[in-house]
Image (cartoon, rainbow, N blue to C red; front, side):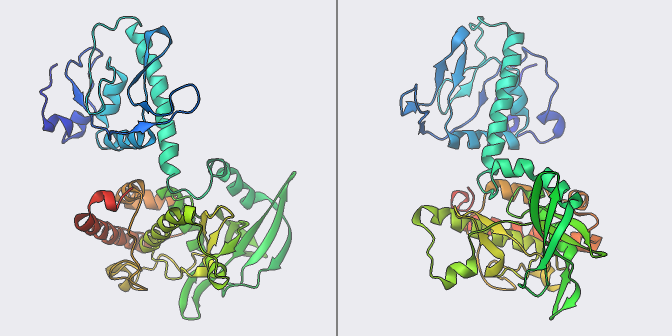
Length: 390
């Protein structure tokens, strides 16, 4: 089966073309893939600025060295054209040039093809796992260890024995701090159960849980684990108690400046927070509910005034160029976040947030999804993709 080398082949239009069932050995054509030209430092054992290319390994194999930027670039290309993953797994190749091709080199016969495919699959899964963790860490505010422990924390919050409670004394929703214990493990949580109209705003404890589930669905990892928990005979939301260094309000009141080496990251988190608030229609993003860890990671709390479904919040975003609350822009966003927003549909959201949101509230999220993506596209047209997405 021969394929013509043309642009249509590079960007197949249908699923059957993207994921063909092609036996090993039918890949005779070159597969163009472009990469940014740059060098990388690999630490001890190799030159500090090794040009990217093939590195000799035992048994005559070749290891292609990529920089972080190139790995991200490769993942973006492969995500857009899934068939490249399969062609990579089942094609004899070596990396000949930075802006070159993967080639079928019939002179390479040092390793049995089947063995090479198995080794390549193993290497590929390692690289893919690294890529996914790398991409998620581009804007994750919880560490990989904290994210991996999240399911256990959710179970702890649902089932642990409540050993003490006290009023926090902050906020209009009158939250309580619950101290809990399960075996040798002890943690605290913030419990609240606001419902209905309070001080001119519609409040809902279920929105706290929905915001956390949307945070997971989008891969933000900025909201602490939050579950439903009954306390004193009442249903409410229980959020894992995060020890933070300060709130954004405290930072402003004390005149604390963001460290210069953290400023770029801080700005990115600010823009990402605004974009997320636009999607969930959070009309209560105050400086008090933006918290900072000691290393300036941003943690978001208090989402009981989110998921508005009125006409106003379906015609305008809460932020952006025509924001309901303010014309605060989201100038730069992770491309992974944008793609995750683009992939949202009714069923995905329903599965994640049910029963915390009504069908009407989910439909309102999808309306805002389009508004958000439209504004991002306008920004890209005006400033260029490289100046908007990272």
